[in-house]
Image (cartoon, rainbow, N blue to C red):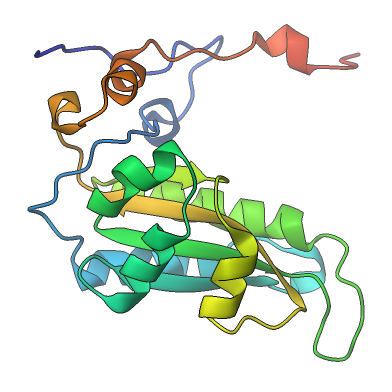
Length: 195
């Protein structure tokens, strides 16, 4: 089944091509690795993301396909995520440091981590890779597996790799999702006030 879809976002105003063409596939090419310089680049982009009071409360666990870290991350994915994410070249566990080393609450840590994860995704996409963010993860087993301190919340996992054909997905439901039209709520629906 070969299906070609235009994956470019239909927007109400022109936006960056990197943003308009970014989407979250589930089918990754298992024969292609993300080069180390590109991994460094997307992590460096995340490092330079904005944060409240420059606290930089993001941390990452990076697993390259074929390593024990990658396998451990896959083991602790949930549902459909476990069915497809193992083919991604890189899996990144995203953590928010909600309490500083001195014991102070870092109220904006999740927000700041979200900005860092988005910046990582945009850099990876700019460099020709695709990214899929996942919340369906087993948090406590991941915490134990990587001995993560309680000051950190494990929030999500990011899959990075090279796009493969939807036909590479073994599950029919996943194949259908891969080629489904991209949809977003209308901009007006997102604005609670706009004077």
